Image 1 (cartoon, one colour):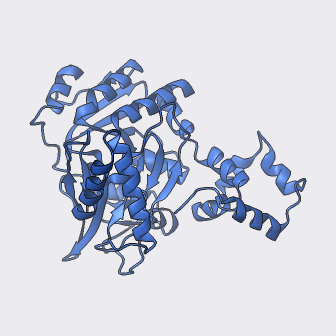
Image 2 (cartoon, one colour):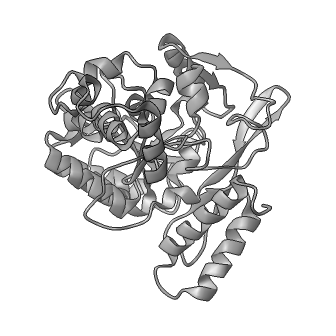
Image 3 (cartoon, helix red, strand yellow):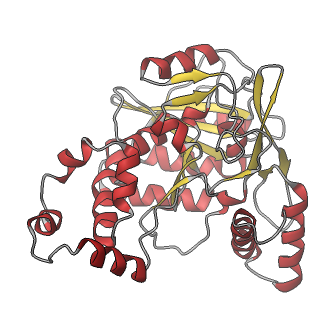
Length: 367
């Protein structure tokens, strides 16, 4: 689901097609700086809102500003816009992801009472993320099995043999409170994406990076209101699914048999591919590449059970580990990049892999 503005030609064509006068009431309404847009847009279904964004740059910018404002989502946790931007900068330095119900609320334009902020971090950078949260006035709330001091508990979390937490790629879960607000730091054993793709169903497989917001299964999640049940280990899976049934989603046990479906089995999916709903976030002061788009996976269905499948992928030239559903393509592209560049390999690799993915989706090259 591409949410980029229209090309100049297409925007001109649409303006000629509908011939809306520049000083028409409709035009003046959307130009109001402090208008009732929030109320009007709240009555528009998500699918229609996306179509509205595709009509022209003016509406694309307005809808994005009013309906998909990241500051509105994060201000309750960090107090002011400056701290929100500092949090996003911390994200960029640590490759921290926002997911769970927080990311779902962002896309769905709703607020759940007593909702936590769930952030997913690498063991390598967990200490920096925790330091940021503590300096924002949050206090560590240890569980019975955890050490009272957050530094001591972090030493356990990021050790070479961290405690396994439910076997879903989670090394540890750290809870922080400030008043009635709660932030959960989920420390990943290998990569945050392994944990996110091990959620109980597709409804919560949404991600906010420092640069983009990605809904991996947007049509089923926000249009048909279906959640594919994903088989995963650990307690609390049924409880988690029931929570979203109570919020209006239906749980389906079988993936789609349609070839061109986001829920199709044995289809190689990528973060940011043509099935993903991608919202570009306001730029940061640092100019870096969104490495989350390297991650890929597949859905597999066997004996009435659906799983997400991937393998952990590591390279000595990259700082972090990623998940990949197709080793050949990733390794070929990385080899090409290493032969051409001596610096900034990660950014060049991510860009090259994104171009290769787009060519495959358009049928220009075989996989």
